Length: 242
Ligand code: URA
Image (tube, rainbow, N blue to C red):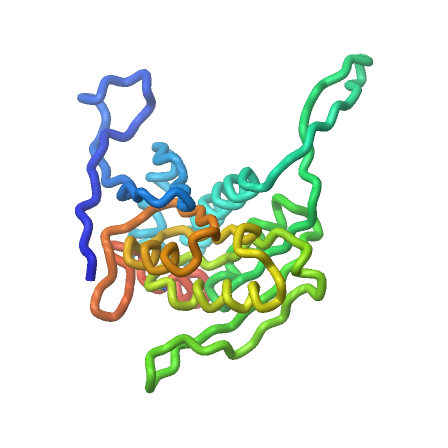
């Protein structure tokens, strides 16, 4: 397994000198031009610190994860093209702005990806949402597609693919293959995740070089069970059950 030393940075508002800021581990830098890592702001690092902490209780885990998911969705939407749109304000002046002209949908990789659906709905009212269930075959250890329910016109939509933990990338690769088999071009898929591993990113980018990835953090690597380290444990368990 690839193991990466994550950089330590002073974190805090710019008006403070570095000597007065705490040092924190920030995301590993990744040189893959389709991968966008959220700016490592003090707020994002504080939110990630909350959800990584094993002592954080479920209600707080949900609350702080939702804040990160909201940031991911907002950034993911920035990767959609816009067209010029000039409007008139209530004081009869024009404003040269933009608007998104296209259709989108969310596709969650069950079960953990479903935790990201509300964040997408909060940004895009009445957005269509599809689902894909992929599970690892116990015997062969390869991912297997169990279920998919996708909007019938998905080929004409931009797809925000949702899965919080981007570990080996096996499920994400299979989910994208399902989308491609329905006619969605690779370059109209944006994969949103909370924490990614360098191994997952490199495996995914080799196979799917046109799919954009938006993540909050690239961690050090994977352990022998393919959990992300330092990670946050099992996202689905922490969000839904513990
Ligand atoms: N899925 C999780 O929930 N956590 C990991 O660390 C890896 C995959």
